[in-house]
Length: 108
Ligand code: 2BA
Ligand code: 2BA
Image 1: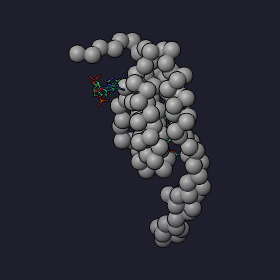
Image 2: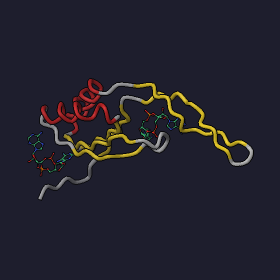
Image 3: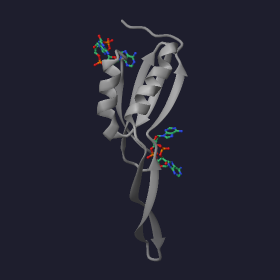
């Protein structure tokens, strides 16, 4: 068995969770925060049999889009401790996916 950890954009998560559930995959959705943009994203945990991994990745691909985001997160420090917001264009991927081996899966 594998655990798929998928970090996706909040906008894509409702349709993705719906499609995964419709296809009888079990999903746990966690609210997460990206370290770089410091804004919300969604982390999904999906435990599946080994042979289902590619099917899950395909469902993720079909639902998640890459987006260009302009953020004023970065600041330039000026003399006298003044901070000036500095616009930055960031390309946020459709999904970041990790596939982990599961040693044991128990349902009580
Ligand atoms: P359980 O299978 O006992 O799962 C309870 C919760 O544990 C799930 O909540 C989900 O958050 C998590 N979970 C279980 N198996 C998982 C896995 N393989 N990977 C990731 N997370 C997992 P819910 O999704 O709200 O599901 C509540 C109950 O509804 C489930 O109880 C199951 O009996 C049923 N269920 C869930 N998804 C289903 C699906 N796609 N088709 C049919 N029944 C489903
Ligand atoms: P954030 O950390 O908020 O990153 C958002 C986007 O900012 C990233 O998109 C990337 O284009 C850029 N970025 C992130 N860190 C950077 C850095 N140190 N220098 C320059 N640019 C940087 P994605 O790569 O598509 O990542 C989207 C989200 O997925 C990330 O949100 C993070 O929450 C998660 N993520 C991506 N790679 C990860 C990894 N290796 N481990 C854990 N989480 C990861």
